[in-house]
Image 1 (cartoon, rainbow, N blue to C red):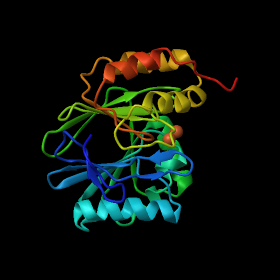
Image 2 (spheres, helix red, strand yellow):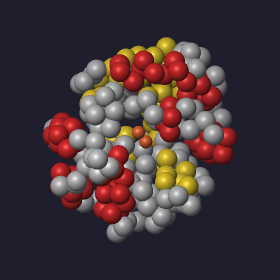
Image 3 (cartoon, helix red, strand yellow):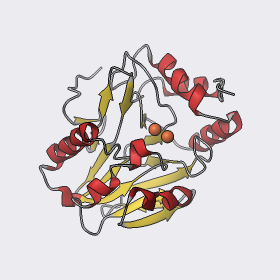
Image 4 (cartoon, protein in one colour):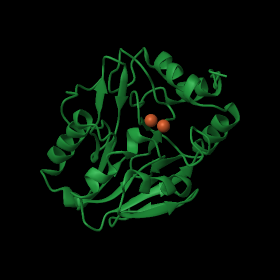
Length: 245
Ligand SMILES: [Fe+2]
Ligand SMILES: [Fe+2]
């Protein structure tokens, strides 16, 4: 387990340029995990998060530290579905990042971004679309319909073999740590069983991501998984979802 200070941005272990810029609300056992990819002179902010001042301030300050205040490096933001815990901060960030910023979202989620007051260009993406940084680094977008929203997607970074998994592989836990610990299977189950409404949809998403070689999973809640990945994928197949029906 690498050490980290949750009050500071954290370089995700095993990577040279992916930063966790999130926060944990330990009272309710809920963490939010925006990530920042810094690729040369360009940066992409992924699932930037909440606009509540106590949340936004933390993410903003962590991003500022990583970029040494140069927010204009952020030429791209990407949101993996339309929920407020990842999108609400977009209008706050769009006015301080690069004025030409483009926001990437699956087309069915893109529709909702204007409802947050987003004014920047929104680029709608479809299944299998690729995003390429100026360096040639490639991301592949993989749609995961109904997990948990019609317009959800996840994102694979070919350089680091990382899967940004949005709400898939998220967790609720009062024993939160940035990297999955011995409590994480339970935390994962506690989040997934009530929040994902269809086993068929979940299995479809798992099938799609199995086409990629994954070294780490970076979910939007809970903990980063970079060990025993197969164990979590197998566990996911056996979860009893739609628990509140
Ligand atoms: Fe969500
Ligand atoms: Fe979420």
